[in-house]
Length: 327
Ligand code: SAM
Ligand code: SF4
Image (cartoon, rainbow, N blue to C red; front, top):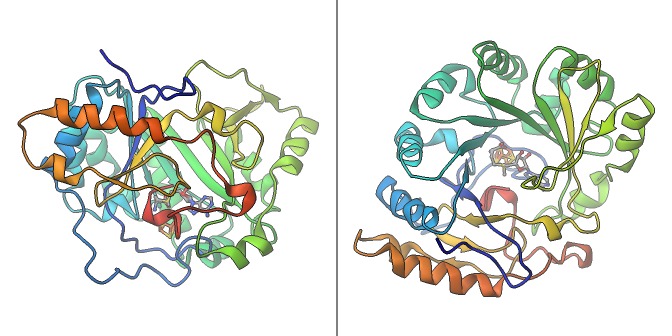
């Protein structure tokens, strides 16, 4: 099988597919004024288009798929999308990132449809802070959904928290309490600058270094990276069932380990989270006739993938906010 390998020798077994641009939350770093549809924006990819896309990717080595958005759970046909993905040969990890708004009600139906990994965004464990950051007083319900899914043995559960200076940077003690008995990972993600959050970024961006030093001082140890590990640096502690991951996009070598491609809800291939190129795939998703054409297109477009992003120089590419591409 031909695999997706770029000119720097990086392999891409991982696809992040946004299934919707809309979102119902208004996270202060992402959509502070809530989602507003662009006039004339096309509808998101239909299930049949998604199926064709995934079949083509599976022919070039797809092993891990993440459904994201906007808020993917707002799609009424989400169980169909999950089931369609679960039926594609080769996909071993079928994951989704969600703000958790429907987690408690629906996680069991997603699991039943074939989802085997969930990332839930939880930026703070304090009710007021959570509401202030996301615009929604839903922490209690989201945490209850996580505990239900854990109790039922959901295969992989991770929480995402964006590190925000002055808003959630004193929460480590609460996180440590939370992780003592829960076998899940929380990932602290450094805030990324996007096209629309420049001022917010100046005020709230915080490097993860201080957090990593605090973890080391409390006996947390960096785990060895597996061969297919993503960009997270992961810490473990013998007294805790949970783990802590750090995602630091501004750190040296972050892009060297890149193993993912992205497709937006409109069907544009994005080679980099902060790239300047959106390559329309939708015209090639209209008929079952020949996935080879799409595969050849993917292989040739990969030649345009750059070695790294230009975030250090403040270049955010086409990405106004991460809801537009899925993070
Ligand atoms: N709505 C879903 C959610 O929030 O989980 C999925 C889409 S959201 C864009 C995916 C992830 O990106 C979330 O964990 C979110 O916190 C993170 N994110 C959004 N904007 C970000 C930024 N500017 N810097 C770092 N992470 C960000
Ligand atoms: Fe919506 Fe996710 Fe962006 Fe928050 S981070 S506004 S939940 S897309």
